[in-house]
Length: 300
Image 1 (cartoon, rainbow, N blue to C red):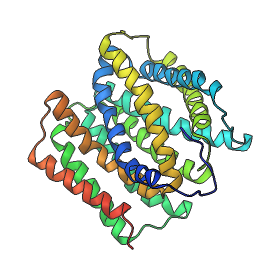
Image 2 (cartoon, rainbow, N blue to C red):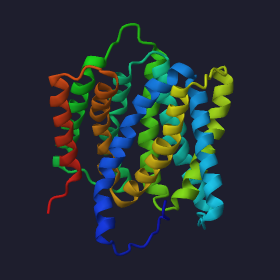
Image 3 (cartoon, rainbow, N blue to C red):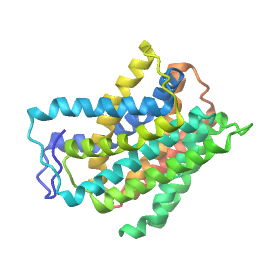
């Protein structure tokens, strides 16, 4: 992971190609989150899984960091980086995972969290971003597409109120965290920032796990695989892609990428578990892709 710098530098062709591919790679990585939950939650309570995930990320960073020079952010930025990390990690992941463990279907959780781009657009003026009419159309198309993809998976029968509240907490956390980081601490070294953010998140999730959960972890091959993927790919890889995206692009454009996560997850679940992927879902996926294109593609 390379350092984040404030001053723009010349970009080589290879670097330019990688930057263009970053959004697609990010969506593919982020979309595996619900697949990992399907593998990991049967063998662990949700907050303890997240605690082990956060500890694993910190262990990898602490092992690697002595061998490289890491520029630490000024002390005045540390608290902003830590707070954005708590919102993006403890708030978002904790809300989604506990909501699913409490009985919320993953599709419905994806739909609720899928409101993030619209919510981000509503508050974008607070950080000096303007949302055009074309982008609003894109947000609407994206949400309709997400709804079509997850419609077959939604069930509201005996849905616990707590799971709905937790999913909404996750939505508010990732939206606020994205905007807060874009406004307060857009530039910092990825290694130092990740270490700060996951340490702060662990300081929140451990007390919550001790208060509300019992230690229920079975170290099966499935669980260990899900945990390793969560640490190395979702947390380290995903954050390494999200931070530069936030730094280089507007929050509204970056947030619109989350519309693509439920459709891509549905394709992955169809391949991995044979879950239904209907013609309506295919149409919804197309609608979401068009919606995101309207938001992120700039007119020349």
